[in-house]
Image (cartoon, rainbow, N blue to C red; front, side, top):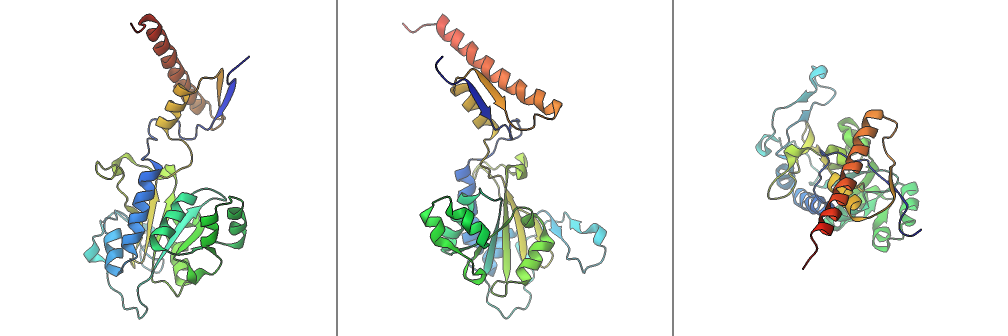
Length: 273
Protein backbone atom coordinates (compact mmCIF):
# COMPACT_ATOMS: atom_id res chain seq x y z
CA UNK A 1 0.00 0.00 0.00
CA UNK A 2 1.50 3.38 -1.02
CA UNK A 3 0.78 7.00 -0.15
CA UNK A 4 -0.26 8.61 3.12
CA UNK A 5 -2.74 6.56 5.11
CA UNK A 6 -3.80 8.68 8.12
CA UNK A 7 -3.29 12.38 8.85
CA UNK A 8 -3.86 13.69 12.37
CA UNK A 9 -4.91 17.29 11.79
CA UNK A 10 -4.82 20.22 14.23
CA UNK A 11 -8.32 21.65 13.73
CA UNK A 12 -8.16 24.34 16.44
CA UNK A 13 -9.35 27.02 14.03
CA UNK A 14 -11.52 24.90 11.76
CA UNK A 15 -14.34 27.40 11.40
CA UNK A 16 -15.23 30.04 8.82
CA UNK A 17 -14.79 32.84 11.36
CA UNK A 18 -11.08 32.08 11.64
CA UNK A 19 -9.75 33.72 8.49
CA UNK A 20 -6.72 35.52 9.86
CA UNK A 21 -4.25 37.88 8.23
CA UNK A 22 -0.97 36.18 7.41
CA UNK A 23 1.76 35.85 10.03
CA UNK A 24 3.93 38.17 7.95
CA UNK A 25 1.22 40.87 8.05
CA UNK A 26 0.97 40.68 11.83
CA UNK A 27 4.76 40.64 12.26
CA UNK A 28 5.05 43.77 10.12
CA UNK A 29 2.35 45.57 12.09
CA UNK A 30 3.91 44.65 15.44
CA UNK A 31 7.30 45.84 14.24
CA UNK A 32 5.89 49.16 13.02
CA UNK A 33 3.80 49.66 16.15
CA UNK A 34 6.66 49.25 18.63
CA UNK A 35 9.09 51.24 16.50
CA UNK A 36 6.71 54.20 16.38
CA UNK A 37 5.66 53.99 20.02
CA UNK A 38 9.21 53.78 21.33
CA UNK A 39 10.42 56.98 19.69
CA UNK A 40 8.87 59.42 22.16
CA UNK A 41 5.88 60.11 24.39
CA UNK A 42 4.13 61.59 21.38
CA UNK A 43 4.88 58.44 19.42
CA UNK A 44 3.33 56.39 22.23
CA UNK A 45 0.22 58.59 22.14
CA UNK A 46 -0.14 58.08 18.42
CA UNK A 47 0.27 54.32 18.79
CA UNK A 48 -2.57 54.00 21.29
CA UNK A 49 -4.88 56.84 20.23
CA UNK A 50 -7.44 54.56 18.55
CA UNK A 51 -8.25 52.66 21.72
CA UNK A 52 -11.94 51.80 22.01
CA UNK A 53 -11.93 50.53 25.59
CA UNK A 54 -10.32 51.90 28.72
CA UNK A 55 -9.96 50.64 32.26
CA UNK A 56 -10.06 52.52 35.52
CA UNK A 57 -7.39 52.03 38.09
CA UNK A 58 -8.51 50.12 41.21
CA UNK A 59 -8.31 53.12 43.56
CA UNK A 60 -10.95 55.08 41.65
CA UNK A 61 -14.62 55.13 42.54
CA UNK A 62 -17.37 53.11 40.95
CA UNK A 63 -15.27 49.99 40.36
CA UNK A 64 -18.26 48.05 39.09
CA UNK A 65 -18.14 50.24 35.99
CA UNK A 66 -14.42 49.82 35.49
CA UNK A 67 -14.76 49.43 31.70
CA UNK A 68 -15.72 52.39 29.55
CA UNK A 69 -16.27 52.36 25.80
CA UNK A 70 -15.47 56.07 25.35
CA UNK A 71 -12.92 56.40 22.52
CA UNK A 72 -9.56 57.80 23.55
CA UNK A 73 -7.82 60.24 21.21
CA UNK A 74 -4.14 61.05 21.48
CA UNK A 75 -4.77 64.59 22.67
CA UNK A 76 -6.82 63.19 25.61
CA UNK A 77 -3.75 61.48 27.05
CA UNK A 78 -2.50 63.53 29.97
CA UNK A 79 1.17 64.35 30.38
CA UNK A 80 1.70 63.49 34.03
CA UNK A 81 4.78 64.98 35.64
CA UNK A 82 7.57 62.43 35.59
CA UNK A 83 11.20 63.32 36.05
CA UNK A 84 12.30 60.17 34.27
CA UNK A 85 12.90 60.32 30.51
CA UNK A 86 10.35 58.47 28.41
CA UNK A 87 11.27 54.84 27.83
CA UNK A 88 8.92 52.20 26.47
CA UNK A 89 8.68 48.60 27.71
CA UNK A 90 7.15 45.98 25.39
CA UNK A 91 5.69 42.84 26.96
CA UNK A 92 4.88 39.85 24.76
CA UNK A 93 2.59 37.09 25.99
CA UNK A 94 3.92 33.59 25.38
CA UNK A 95 3.32 29.96 26.26
CA UNK A 96 6.19 27.58 27.06
CA UNK A 97 7.05 27.67 23.35
CA UNK A 98 5.68 29.64 20.45
CA UNK A 99 5.36 33.33 19.45
CA UNK A 100 9.10 33.52 18.78
CA UNK A 101 8.61 35.42 15.52
CA UNK A 102 6.60 38.09 17.32
CA UNK A 103 9.08 38.89 20.07
CA UNK A 104 12.06 38.61 17.74
CA UNK A 105 10.45 41.18 15.44
CA UNK A 106 9.79 43.56 18.33
CA UNK A 107 13.36 43.20 19.59
CA UNK A 108 14.80 43.75 16.13
CA UNK A 109 12.69 46.88 15.66
CA UNK A 110 14.00 48.33 18.93
CA UNK A 111 17.51 46.85 18.61
CA UNK A 112 17.23 45.56 22.15
CA UNK A 113 17.90 42.38 24.12
CA UNK A 114 14.96 40.21 25.22
CA UNK A 115 14.36 39.56 28.89
CA UNK A 116 13.03 36.17 29.99
CA UNK A 117 13.06 34.14 33.19
CA UNK A 118 15.90 31.57 33.45
CA UNK A 119 13.54 28.61 32.88
CA UNK A 120 12.29 30.25 29.69
CA UNK A 121 15.85 30.81 28.53
CA UNK A 122 16.58 27.10 28.90
CA UNK A 123 13.55 26.32 26.75
CA UNK A 124 14.63 28.84 24.12
CA UNK A 125 18.08 27.24 23.99
CA UNK A 126 16.47 24.01 22.79
CA UNK A 127 15.31 25.81 19.63
CA UNK A 128 18.95 26.25 18.57
CA UNK A 129 18.20 29.71 17.19
CA UNK A 130 21.57 31.47 17.35
CA UNK A 131 20.20 34.98 16.74
CA UNK A 132 17.48 34.57 19.36
CA UNK A 133 19.80 33.13 21.99
CA UNK A 134 22.23 36.01 21.47
CA UNK A 135 19.49 38.48 22.42
CA UNK A 136 18.31 36.77 25.61
CA UNK A 137 19.13 38.30 28.98
CA UNK A 138 18.02 37.83 32.58
CA UNK A 139 18.60 41.52 33.44
CA UNK A 140 15.25 43.28 33.15
CA UNK A 141 16.48 46.88 32.84
CA UNK A 142 18.74 46.00 29.89
CA UNK A 143 15.88 44.79 27.68
CA UNK A 144 12.98 46.75 26.20
CA UNK A 145 11.21 43.51 25.30
CA UNK A 146 10.07 41.25 28.15
CA UNK A 147 8.48 37.81 27.77
CA UNK A 148 5.46 37.23 30.01
CA UNK A 149 2.84 34.55 30.49
CA UNK A 150 -0.01 34.89 27.99
CA UNK A 151 -2.54 35.32 30.81
CA UNK A 152 -0.64 38.20 32.40
CA UNK A 153 -0.70 40.37 29.29
CA UNK A 154 -4.50 40.33 29.30
CA UNK A 155 -4.67 41.70 32.85
CA UNK A 156 -4.26 45.49 33.07
CA UNK A 157 -3.79 45.40 36.84
CA UNK A 158 -0.94 42.90 36.56
CA UNK A 159 0.74 44.98 33.86
CA UNK A 160 0.26 48.14 35.90
CA UNK A 161 2.01 46.47 38.83
CA UNK A 162 4.74 45.12 36.55
CA UNK A 163 5.47 48.58 35.15
CA UNK A 164 5.61 50.05 38.68
CA UNK A 165 8.38 47.53 39.46
CA UNK A 166 10.43 48.67 36.46
CA UNK A 167 12.02 52.03 37.34
CA UNK A 168 13.85 52.11 34.02
CA UNK A 169 10.57 52.36 32.06
CA UNK A 170 7.75 54.91 32.02
CA UNK A 171 5.20 53.35 29.64
CA UNK A 172 4.24 49.84 28.54
CA UNK A 173 2.69 48.21 25.49
CA UNK A 174 1.68 44.56 25.75
CA UNK A 175 0.83 42.17 22.91
CA UNK A 176 -1.40 39.13 23.34
CA UNK A 177 -0.66 37.11 20.19
CA UNK A 178 -3.39 34.52 19.70
CA UNK A 179 -5.92 33.75 17.00
CA UNK A 180 -8.74 34.09 19.51
CA UNK A 181 -8.30 37.88 19.49
CA UNK A 182 -9.32 38.09 15.83
CA UNK A 183 -12.36 40.18 14.90
CA UNK A 184 -13.53 40.73 11.34
CA UNK A 185 -14.31 44.33 12.27
CA UNK A 186 -10.57 44.93 12.54
CA UNK A 187 -9.88 44.00 8.93
CA UNK A 188 -8.55 46.90 6.91
CA UNK A 189 -8.19 47.06 3.15
CA UNK A 190 -4.78 48.73 3.28
CA UNK A 191 -3.03 47.00 6.16
CA UNK A 192 -4.87 43.67 6.08
CA UNK A 193 -5.52 44.08 9.79
CA UNK A 194 -6.20 47.19 11.84
CA UNK A 195 -4.24 46.93 15.09
CA UNK A 196 -5.96 48.70 17.97
CA UNK A 197 -5.39 48.39 21.72
CA UNK A 198 -8.31 46.70 23.42
CA UNK A 199 -7.38 48.09 26.84
CA UNK A 200 -5.79 51.40 27.82
CA UNK A 201 -5.37 52.10 31.53
CA UNK A 202 -6.73 55.37 32.89
CA UNK A 203 -3.30 56.79 33.58
CA UNK A 204 -2.54 56.17 29.91
CA UNK A 205 0.73 54.40 30.58
CA UNK A 206 -0.27 50.82 29.73
CA UNK A 207 -1.92 49.63 26.51
CA UNK A 208 -2.79 46.05 25.60
CA UNK A 209 -3.04 44.88 22.00
CA UNK A 210 -4.66 41.60 20.98
CA UNK A 211 -3.15 40.43 17.70
CA UNK A 212 -4.36 37.38 15.71
CA UNK A 213 -1.01 35.67 15.41
CA UNK A 214 -1.03 31.90 15.77
CA UNK A 215 1.08 28.90 14.94
CA UNK A 216 -2.14 26.95 14.38
CA UNK A 217 -3.45 26.83 10.82
CA UNK A 218 -6.30 29.18 9.96
CA UNK A 219 -9.49 28.00 8.27
CA UNK A 220 -8.29 28.73 4.67
CA UNK A 221 -4.96 27.02 5.37
CA UNK A 222 -6.73 23.92 6.64
CA UNK A 223 -8.95 23.83 3.57
CA UNK A 224 -5.98 24.21 1.23
CA UNK A 225 -4.06 21.47 3.03
CA UNK A 226 -6.92 18.97 2.95
CA UNK A 227 -7.56 19.63 -0.73
CA UNK A 228 -3.87 19.39 -1.65
CA UNK A 229 -2.54 16.43 0.36
CA UNK A 230 -4.20 13.11 -0.55
CA UNK A 231 -4.62 10.49 2.16
CA UNK A 232 -6.91 7.66 3.18
CA UNK A 233 -8.28 9.27 6.34
CA UNK A 234 -8.08 12.59 8.21
CA UNK A 235 -8.42 12.48 11.98
CA UNK A 236 -9.17 15.72 13.82
CA UNK A 237 -7.23 16.17 17.06
CA UNK A 238 -8.98 19.18 18.66
CA UNK A 239 -12.42 19.57 20.19
CA UNK A 240 -13.66 16.09 19.42
CA UNK A 241 -15.08 15.64 22.91
CA UNK A 242 -17.87 18.07 22.05
CA UNK A 243 -20.49 16.49 19.80
CA UNK A 244 -21.56 19.76 18.17
CA UNK A 245 -18.00 20.75 17.38
CA UNK A 246 -17.18 17.23 16.18
CA UNK A 247 -20.06 17.32 13.69
CA UNK A 248 -19.06 20.78 12.48
CA UNK A 249 -15.39 19.91 11.91
CA UNK A 250 -16.12 16.56 10.31
CA UNK A 251 -18.62 18.31 8.06
CA UNK A 252 -15.94 20.68 6.78
CA UNK A 253 -13.49 17.83 6.21
CA UNK A 254 -16.08 15.77 4.33
CA UNK A 255 -17.11 18.73 2.18
CA UNK A 256 -13.54 19.57 1.19
CA UNK A 257 -12.70 15.98 0.26
CA UNK A 258 -15.95 15.69 -1.71
CA UNK A 259 -15.05 18.83 -3.66
CA UNK A 260 -11.67 17.30 -4.51
CA UNK A 261 -13.33 14.14 -5.84
CA UNK A 262 -15.78 16.19 -7.90
CA UNK A 263 -12.92 18.20 -9.39
CA UNK A 264 -11.14 14.97 -10.33
CA UNK A 265 -14.29 13.59 -11.95
CA UNK A 266 -14.79 16.75 -14.00
CA UNK A 267 -11.15 16.64 -15.10
CA UNK A 268 -11.60 13.04 -16.28
CA UNK A 269 -14.72 13.97 -18.23
CA UNK A 270 -13.03 16.91 -19.93
CA UNK A 271 -9.54 15.77 -20.96
CA UNK A 272 -7.23 18.29 -22.59
CA UNK A 273 -6.99 18.10 -26.40
